[in-house]
Image (cartoon, rainbow, N blue to C red):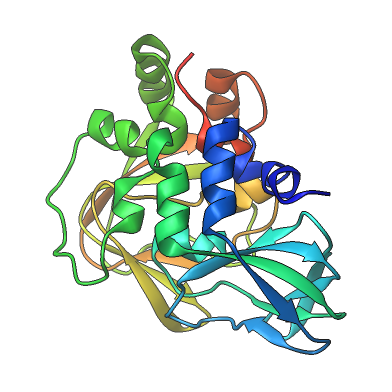
Amino acid sequence: MGILELIHSVALFRRLRVVELEQVAASVSPRHMRLGEVLIRELDPNAESMFIVQSGTVEVSRSGVQIRELGPGGSFGEIALLHNAPRTASVTASSDGVVLELDRAGFVGALSDYQADPVAFKPADTPARTAVTLAEALRSMPIPASLDSTTRTALARAATLRSLDPGEVVFTEGSVSDRIYLLLAGRADVLHGEQVIADITPGQWFGEIGILHQIARTATVTAREPSDVAEISVEALQAAIGHAPTVADLGRRPD
């Protein structure tokens, strides 16, 4: 499989045009991996690259437990870049092989034409944002932003607004992933175990990882202060886009 085909096989890049695939291909760097080599480490706060397996296999583990194995065409490391957060899992080479490394600049460039969430790429020291409206928050989310205004309005009407007290849990690590959230006001913490690994500010979306990857919640989210969130069920999201949401929908264009 050629590099362009390999990149195109990644769900996040599946909607790229040939010229854009070529730009990504020019930005990746081949990296040889050896059996047992740790490529990324869980909770590492310095996430600067994502990877695509070109040859060989890698194991993905969380808290020391293997959760899946990836072969050629498999990708990893994009979650931390999407959310400017620590790594959510460790990835170790389970054979010799080659991975293609795409750094943050190349990753952001690849998604910049797709209305990817600008908050996800903000520097860690950016001041907290003030409260936002649901309409503003939906326009910042990659999937709703690609919808026409009528469909996006219907999605907003399907959302449930919820006020949170300090310390109130939005969802817990390991629970069922059945909805996506938008923080409209306040501030929330993302916890892995008892460790705070990231914070959420108004306008940011969260909870999509479990839905897009069809896995249980990878972290716990609690309100740090009085906060308002909007909840969008997976059924409402599916009705809006016409199919079950996947990672490829992060690259949707308006019809």
